[in-house]
Figure 1 (cartoon, helix red, strand yellow):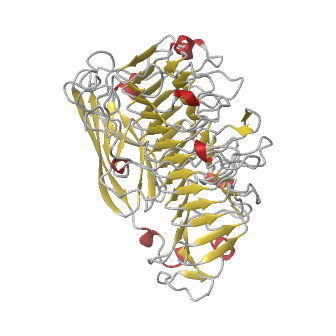
Figure 2: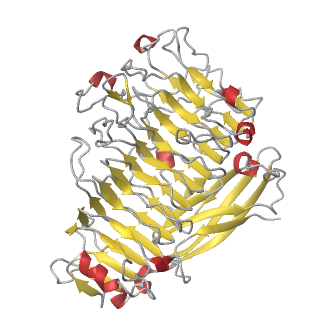
Figure 3: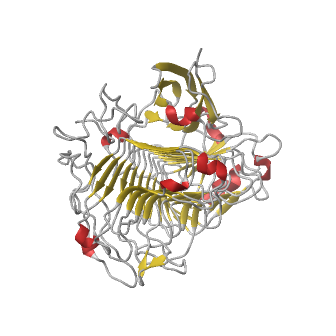
Length: 611
């Protein structure tokens, strides 16, 4: 009896860099945990088994700034579906250990990945080298040399039978006015990468967007890739003044590549760094954004509802720390780091660093609510899967929300939210909001800091909110599991608009008939009466420094008193004397902890064991 690793998608060229989606076939692995019952969406194997991946290839993610060191290793991951980007050629052994805690049964799945050498795939004239000087400084042997990106695109157009590489000379700045690849001239699989050497990444000053709209991508068996690597993109928007033209960075259209990979890039000053366009033929395409920084946006960092799947791995999607709060007419900064919906049936967000501080929705007169870091399945489709692991999320009226647009039903999904550090701010009302049955929330640290509230309904009233949004019967009966989380509330009760109502750990349980909750740790030292039985907790080691400097808008200047204190991001692991130590003896208990370490025979409540 064996488990098998499945490659759900990888590039057609199969050369570095290669972003790969991995899944598993465990039907013959001998586990007692079975798949969905007839007529149900919920797959217990997605939630009750534990998956420990080793990709046989490891590098430290550079893009995330605020992420615990243990979550920076690209070579390891968790969960039933994952993604890894291989940057170098070679053969790599991929393994996944699957554990069924209820029985002790384990299985090991293995496969070997061969990643080709791009210098062989793109030898000689298959590489077009762009050097504004025309000298071809640093160009590979026998590469074609041109002086502009427009010339390079013209050179590769109409040659779809052979993959091509456009290589930009490092240390150079290029003006880019936009292009629509494939419009009138079919294009090949295309890598757009920085040239060799140690100089700075090439810089693109963009007044137009990158678009792919080649009808032959999805007809005649023409599977194609689109790769960007080690390029810095700059648009005209300035989020600190809410001025500038609105330009999308990369915006594939309906007839877009089967795989888009963005690796090691930087985006600054766009209405959205990656915004694919709706269409009827988009279920073929998937996207990986790896070790990439996105900041200073107007609309979204990334918005995607038109792929079969998306993976955000080791990336930093953070709004500018001095961005204005936004405007109700949507002409200013208006949304958060990531949002998806529509046809997206695979969402993988792992090892990412996200920060939100602006929005479009008003409350309390002059104030704008801050939009969520992650908003999942806004179209409310039934059955999409999500693996949200090992991320650091800061800011938002709701920091992480799984809810549909207003007026749509809540429908069952399969989603795991695990090992995330979720930090609220002076505007946070609920740290996590869930409207979908089929969601498991475990091993997360949820912290509401001790900042001053604006006292305009922007105050925490619950850590996790289950929301009734016209949920159908199947959604209402689909399990929701909430266990081994750490809830830390530090805001003084005197800062509340309604000081007699300290926050709850969970509300809305009545909307679902199958909610399991247990072995969570809760610490609220500054409310009356204080909840401190789970202390003392580890607070001496600060994992990272919050970015929130306080509310600031075009109407109201910086409110420094609402800044998040710098010393609140700790593990809050139980120390000797804590009632949480070794206390997870009944009810649901996680097999491992926040850092993926197996728990001892007598596990503790909360996301961490004793340090």
